[in-house]
Length: 301
Image 1 (cartoon, rainbow, N blue to C red):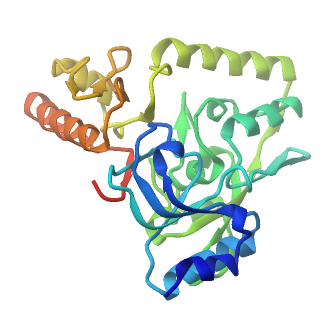
Image 2: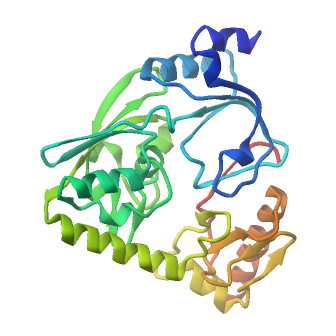
């Protein structure tokens, strides 16, 4: 089968890339070539690309801005579907914000603030897109997506477009029905409340200052690397295991925040994976707690 010939029937040629380096599309700045990297502009195009992949058993993966992702050094055999800059519309209606999956959380936060809508401040500094945030029920500083979502429109595994209310999304700690059933988030309805723009902006700036002070934002990373273990904190356990600054090649446990694995000197994916393995083993040895990576890993390592 000529995959390119089929993709050209669905997408504009300018939205199809061959052997595209995934290091250009992840916040870790790591990752080998994807056979095909596509950037659909319409829901219909997303549906048709997914349908094509399913019908011909072609591996595919949905990405936003690649903020919680580690791609193998040898790349990804199949089709990467990017729901990002071509599908990022945001609009406010009353106390609701409607946004497509590719909209950056920072952009949604700015739009909500300008409309004097409060409730989204916790998410505005998370470096990801709405689709990923809904899928993993992203949270920070006491807030979670499940607290503000009214509904999400998804593409199901059967190719049906459905709108699910927040209860149907089964949002838990870094989990949802979307990940469990391999749905694709297309857009979401966010329910907020009226507030004072100046107060909203001040709170957003306060949270931004906390991130800048506590997180290693100067280095490439995939954000928080490990899920929070019940009753504890991953960064605290890693620090107590004596792993602050621990390195494997160019991969390093951040000295600023031990919950982050960073690329200090052009780390490879294999170095990151080995570092994560050693951290998990060492923390279990010293504390009895086995950490679970939060970052998604795809492709060939």
